[in-house]
Amino acid sequence: MSWLLLAVGLLTLGLGINVLRPSRSFLGMTISFLAEWLASELAHWTILVLGTVVALLASFGGLEHTVGWIGLIAACVGFVLLGIELYLGWRSGPTVVRALENAGLGAPDPFRGRSLRLLFPFYFGDRRVRRIADVRYAEGAGHRHLADVYLPRAGVENAAVLLQIHGGAWIVGNKRQQGRPLMNRMAAAGWVCVAINYRLAPRAKFPDAIVDVKLALAWIREHIAEYGGDPDRIVVSGGSAGAHLAAMAALTVNDPEYQPGFESADTSVLACVPLYPPTDLLALFEDGGPWMRWLIRRTTPLVFGATPTEDPERYRHWSPVTLVRPGLVPFLVVQGTGDNLVPYRQTRAFVERLRAQPGQEVLYLELPGAPHAFEVFHSLRAEAAASAVHRFCSSVVARQMARGLTEGPAIPSDRGSAAADDRIDVDAR
Image 1: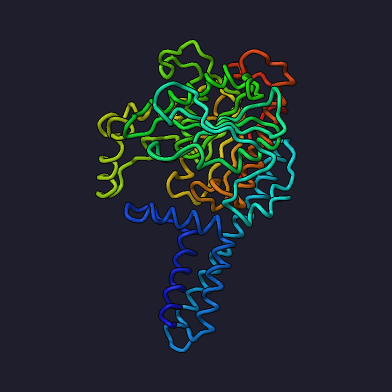
Image 2: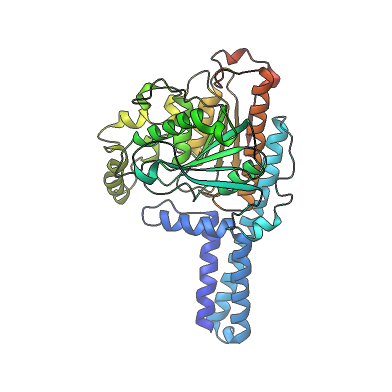
């Protein structure tokens, strides 16, 4: 029992250290991310389960030898570190409230009425929401050109639309794995949400993925009214690789390069909400040690057709940070400081580039301690972020309706002349 208590204690300590200082090394990055993701966003369950195990082991003879006491001490230190992470997760609520209040958007408690969601983080059912599965938005590519449509069970007319794009390093993932807490919240509030699959590497290389996003936008324009949505009020969102694609969709509106065969289709959007987005591909794949350079050489050609060293220009061309220009739609950018896959400094640089544009509307939420993919299931940060996204998107839609924009949701290039009180430029960290 003593040795088992030592093992559990060291595991608890390791999890506690990792949630606060995740690894970015070649060997540890993926394992560190998975451990941080689950332990931090499920910190309350992690503390409860491991605390129960430690208590049982101590009660049944685990403290009869010195190694057991070492394990107990290690576990206690680990619980303190996990408790700090739980506190940081709770702080996401006040962070969101402060940002929304500063932006003049109103700030209800993001955790109000969400207790059961936090107790059952992987339960995505919502009796207020109906899902229509596997709707084809483009021909070919099998299930990669299918979408799920989420809408209020009671029905809706002329509702704003959220296009949700899943992440997965452009290589893995599907439409039912990510964004579910957000889409349930939005659909229950009267939105129509569309979650899409898209072609993945290595079978399909970039820019096929962004072409598929544009195809989905063209389909929404043509068919979303059949589901009660308004084709002139579309917000695009996504996490990780999906956030990269969402940002590119907003930054390359109606660009024929990414609309082969449907160049005349209107693929404009009303706003963009990228969560923990890779925005500078060259910086993301910057050479590290020899093992990291080996990984980059092996994997990047599968997605982008060449390594960053062989063709750096294509990486710049497909980096949202280099596509920023005046006259863009409003952005809400969300990033966590505990993300070991997409450094928060890269996201800050993207936000600063946006803010440098005349009249650009941008709200930046930097959630303390949040890991990559923090909003995949119900957690403190997922609920806080979903609350912010809902309030931001609703505000953008309300302002668009107030202005009477019935043709083309894109913000005009002369946004610099907008009134100061109509601008959102808030940095909440």
